[in-house]
Length: 192
Ligand code: AP5
Ligand code: MG
Image (cartoon, rainbow, N blue to C red; front, side, top):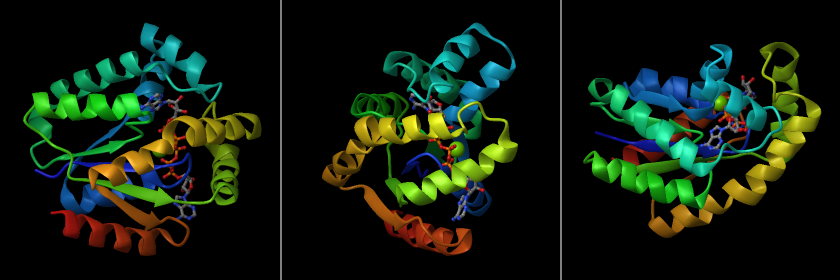
């Protein structure tokens, strides 16, 4: 089993590179953003709560997010034999600690953190472009600015946290999708 976190700012390519990782390694993909957007589109109670945070570019509270992730892991226990890609989780140090616990309780462990390093100008450019067709409530100039602020304040400290844990693999995230994936594969093979 091989479990990885794909880490990076909004628009860094976490979803794009996850698709390639699924194809290459048969891993099970959990995008916490996608889980929440699914709840929003189905109009559930959780979706209503999530929408109020997401559309403002803010994070969903840690305890709620951790309980959602535990549920997703358990509901898909039969599909995660090869391992899991955690996309968009953790986003705070608190969540990172909870991830260690959630994995430990299920006899799993984190093998590597793939950190897609992309500058803010490129992130903004990609998200503005996607915003023209995505329909995502957070792909507009004002919310993108807020997402970047939240990323730098609450999420980017995880880079040092995972460097300290000895599992962080820095990936140059500017460039072509194929070149970036080639670098990711090297990092994954090294962590195996
Ligand atoms: P989430 O869904 O995780 O969004 P995000 O982190 O803002 O990132 P994106 O999904 O927008 O980008 P991505 O990195 O996946 O890049 P992509 O491949 O799509 O979270 C959304 C919200 O949910 C959060 O703001 C928060 O409110 C909430 N949330 C989620 N998880 C949470 C948690 N754990 N705790 C609390 N709250 C949480 O690529 C972006 C675009 O760029 C695409 O159009 C793509 O085609 C293009 N692109 C990709 N790679 C390249 C490349 N190399 N060159 C050019 N273009 C590229
Ligand atoms: Mg994504």
